[in-house]
Image 1 (spheres, one colour):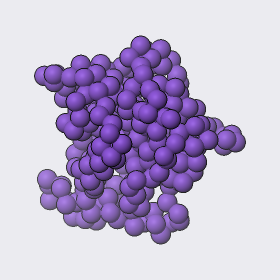
Image 2 (cartoon, rainbow, N blue to C red):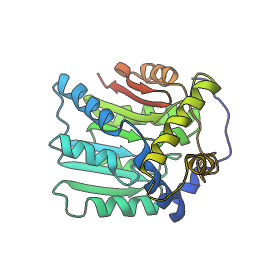
Image 3 (tube, rainbow, N blue to C red):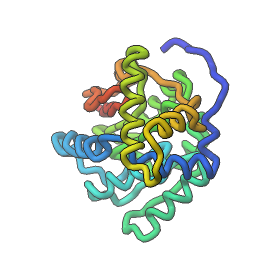
Image 4 (tube, helix red, strand yellow):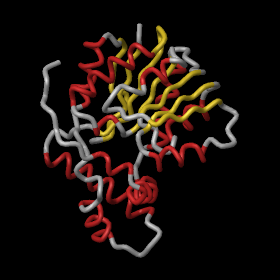
Length: 245
């Protein structure tokens, strides 16, 4: 993969309490959450895969790990994130969980967290949800290569990801979809115009470094993943999957 340059880092806004609190309110408006997780479960069932050991990269409050624990006999879950407020929410989520859950403060932009998660490798499933798109493209590629080495043969990498639109009109359609969803679940009396204004002024608006789904599928194949596909896509929301042979 060719180098695509470095960009000034802006995703550290996710380490702030106010950003995390704001996202907690607006995340309910993101569509297709259950559909995405159900499709993942159907894919893994089709392959006879029942993950018992999972790694969640950029775990946030642990929603993806929770979805897998709810659907599979997961015995061990390792969660990595660089945001203390997010990790705190994840720890609260799994406080009374019977699954062995380990949370790790680790920055996906670097690799210093790898030795810690390697002690629990190989994993049946590595999952990520709306986190890797904050990384520059060369780091996305190298992270996917690291994931490949952490999986057991036959293990899956599944990335629920925010991907790049074809053009500005596709992007506008996606933004309208999110704005409508956030407005629908708003608990106050904000108008849709209010929600749209807040959406475009949000603190994380400039943290995205998006890559097309097709490009990311190509990266996975180049690394050595097989059965690679985008198994779900709705405008800029995608679920990209690949298996270690």
